[in-house]
Image (tube, rainbow, N blue to C red; front, side, top):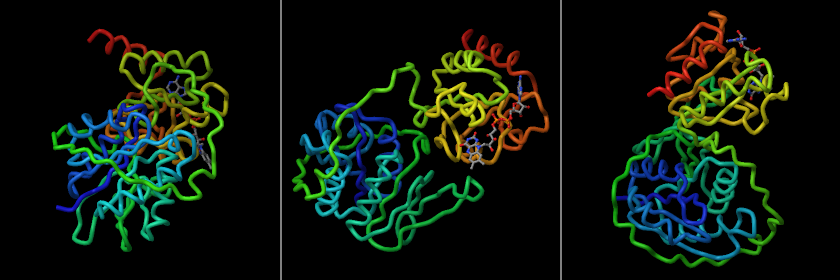
Length: 318
Ligand code: FAD
């Protein structure tokens, strides 16, 4: 069976959930081989094996922490030469998309970004994407070279399927460009204790209907009762009620959680572009004609300041 190379996103050996999703998708099109780089790469092996990695290639070097993306591209290129994979899968983070594009250029192949599904096709993997502000759902495949595909977080439910996870050290020779852009400092964002927006399984988002920064406490309370991340519409962000890092939509982040709750959000096309692929969508809006209701699985017509706290109470009581 063809092998599929999965680029591992981890922090000091702790594998992030989008990588486990990639392993699940990789098993649909071949045998997953994982590539883990940098500090703690060796510590990822057990988790990767528990989720279907037949082999884990590792390489530790200070360059991965000190320089931007090119060392990772060099390593992926070396791994491609060693494995000859049927496809390379990379998480759809900003960094992941840059890595994927640079790798495709290096190995003379094509790249598909932000896939939300992946199946085996007669001529290679077929990826599903949601494009043009989510107006169209397309399927596409790379017709030249080894397909490099980035996959959006939460596109698939993680399956734990144990595999051998045989560890192999990868030989990497860094290119001259690898040390071109040095990282001079890192400022960790103040932690809210909530999951990262693009990776969260549940997102509770507020819009103009929330009517003030202080009222976002209502949204946060529901989010915390569900273990969810908090999102916001651009109207709420532009009004200064919530940080831009939480904006969902065309000019914000794209989320694809299992559950998306939109409170006081009308459902403009630019907002839908960022959340339309959520598995279950719930809206609370006092206007029964709000366009968001065209999209929802469950809609509540009502005042969010009555409905959301009652929902929070109900969740807490369980
Ligand atoms: P509104 O459209 O004003 O809707 C507020 C809703 O709240 C209404 O439906 C109202 O009935 C309801 N409401 C009010 N009070 C209550 C209450 N007490 N209880 C319940 N419901 C209540 N928008 C984004 O979100 N993300 C983007 O990334 C984005 N990018 C854009 C890019 C471009 C180029 C452009 C032109 C626009 C973009 N927009 C984006 C803006 C978008 O067009 C909308 O203006 C925006 O999404 C509206 O936000 P909203 O739904 O919160 O506000």
